[in-house]
Amino acid sequence: MKILITAPYHEKAKEELKKLFGEVDYQPWKLHGRVYNETELIELLSSSKANAIITEHDEVTEKVINSFPELKFIAVCRGTPSNVAIEAAKIHNIPVFHTPGRNAQAVAEMFLAGVIILMRKIVPATKWLYNKKWEKGAHTSYLQFKGNELANKTVGMIGFGDIGKKIANILVSVPCKIQFYDPYVKNSDPRFKSVSLEEIFETSDIVSIHLPENEETEGMINASLLSKMKKDALLVNTARASVVNREDLLEVLENNKIGGALLDVFHHEPPDEIDYKIIHLPNVFATPHIAGATYEVEDHHSFIMNEKLVKFHTEEIISKANYSKIQR
Image (cartoon, rainbow, N blue to C red; front, side):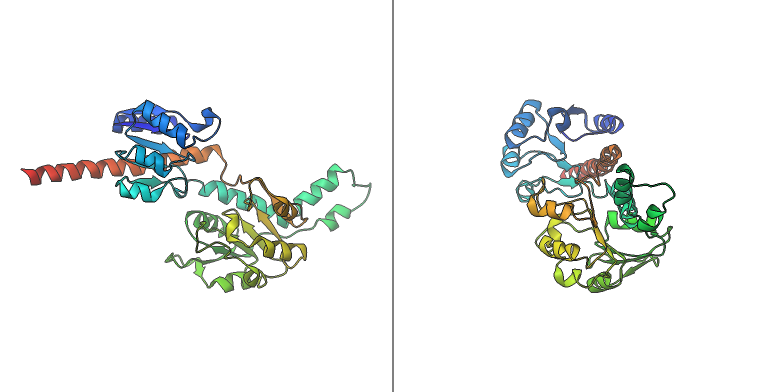
């Protein structure tokens, strides 16, 4: 078998795949300068004569899949395979793998950094310093930029998957009280409390969103929920912008109905006028969708994917062996 890899992939992980499957053609999209579009991906699969593909952000459309219906698998180095025409893959019985949790550590660290920056008023304090506002003998900075500690705060997670749990496991040692809302998660850890969505907003000092983007979650966080937040509470969104009604978010932030927001995702990327209106608010700390952007994430997704492909390969061998016995 020959595998086309267009995702950034750890060297050791590539060598493991060579030993397991035979041949690897490494054409990462980063060297290409951008992700491969539909036409480019078809040309690449055709010229490489690959039997399978490991991708990250490339456009694995219905046309791509229909052009190569014999692919052994499509592996996506992302938390969700949202760039793949899943239904087309199902029609051709092509298994699709992905790597949930690949960026959990990165997002967890960004959560901690961002929340502390907001709570300790780091941005206005550094601007004050850079603008030479520090006068001799003055205690203005100490009084004006006095903030809050993260310790002993109640953090509410909306969505309690790999990222939510990673953050929770770090926060309990701060210590923080952790509660979550996720109807799809059964929790047996006594350190974490499952509560209603309304209770998350009513009782949390920090509300952190960890939801996927789909029909069920679009606009889920609206004025009704935001209005329940404490006046000094923070909203954190490092997941997807579409799960929050941005007009409602703008209203509560502009009118200081909540303490502030840490935002890494926006309704339009690059941001439009309304997005920038939110970004420039003094009670917002915004970053350009980089919560999961670490070099280590590429290592994580390589080995998470290899683990899945080893299992797939082993099960396939066993299945063929059993079929052979039946034929005898």
